[in-house]
Length: 171
Length: 171
Image (cartoon, rainbow over all chains, first blue to last red; front, side):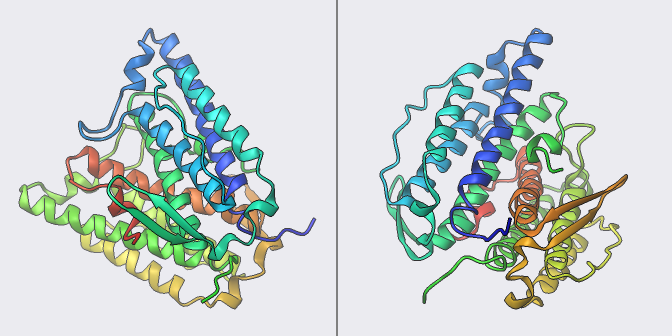
């Protein structure tokens, strides 16, 4: 079937894919903690440097960017999540509800959003983007940044995963 | 000016942007090594786990994926690089030649490549993709994976950078 790139094609499916890969990595981490008698909270609170965010926050931000970006491209208000996950099952559930939200969007709600004005509330100001640079320069790098950092935290803590776990099946 | 997503818009400019951000991060790392009297090779050979690749290799792979992917989408043979960089100036030069290569492609060479067959030689076999999933599921996550890992290695080694350095200027 002939494929064509579009704002939907470049956002919803790749973001779902990355979150699904993150989910599998977290499942492996939970099994690893159990097998090695490591308290799961040790991994969930692990970080690569004292002033970096821990694993749980990396998962929260990756899903935040995912739910916020797709909602904004579709012109709807993103749902609020409480950011209170502190166990592997809770982090997996957060990914699941984010993926379910993303799956609820139809391509017609996202396609054509290249020039749409996106207002992004930050702590101290509101950033304004057009849809295309928002997706390509902010959303995708941001999602991959936090999923990769989650991967790196777990890899640094001895979990035996490889880039294939991050990319997912590619053949 | 009205923007539209395309295979070119979703590949060449964001990849150049990410490599340029990586370049700035490496420049900060070189300054940091100098200021702290750290042998630059300590940072260049740093890794997050014994069987992970060091910083130099992360930069090499990020640029490899960049030059290979854009060349393949344009239907031309990617140039070969020697993978022998062992200093910050050499890593910066590698990024510069990759960015110069990417800048040499015109949108007409990349646009419309969604259904083009991309053959990707691996160590033991050749993967075959269509252009669209190649870009979205393999190339972009791969570039961001290695740039983020380079960032994480340096952050773990005390370099004071933040996500803004990874994303570049967003306003």
